[in-house]
Image 1 (tube, rainbow over the protein chains, first blue to last red):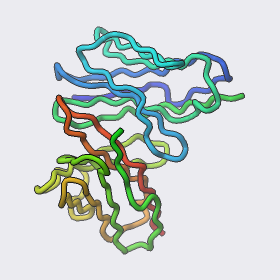
Image 2: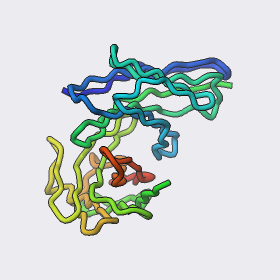
Image 3: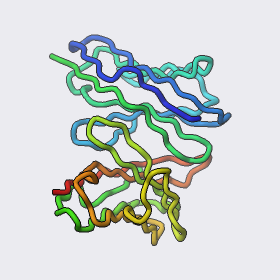
Image 4: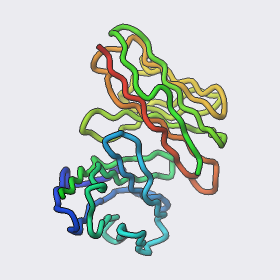
Length: 113
Length: 117
């Protein structure tokens, strides 16, 4: 079975705190892609990152960083020095070899001033 | 970057009527498009895969006679919710696959919010 689990349903932090959103996936595919999307209240999905299964290098983009650990099937997302504008629902997703994108349940992040 | 556009962005209709939602790839040809549904406070669930020139492939539990999908051209897929009922009220999002190497890039539309009264 292929599955993406985001165990944290809601997270609330105060501005400038660092926050990590967890993502654990299950797949038997040898080649797959992992994604993170941000969904603000307006509803559209904002693409944040795509990572293929052969690239375990961690990535940093401004205040965002991602930790891909194939050994634990995890692809965690950290926001450093969070801001109110970071408040949104964040989805982790797995693109399997069949081309289907499987989403996690989402984590609602609330950053308070 | 590539753009996928959905129309309408929101629609309110009476129970029993049919509603059509369009998904267009604006600057690339998409042989495959996907339709997702998202209920409030829930995740996105894949409804069907739309392939240009052939029948759509529906996920388990999705009624193909209720959610008609037509992918008549390489830039347009439509989802028609037939005889809509209040329980069909949801946020519908499409995505289109950009035909690059590997599995291709995926781009999402802005979503269409359907409210059935």
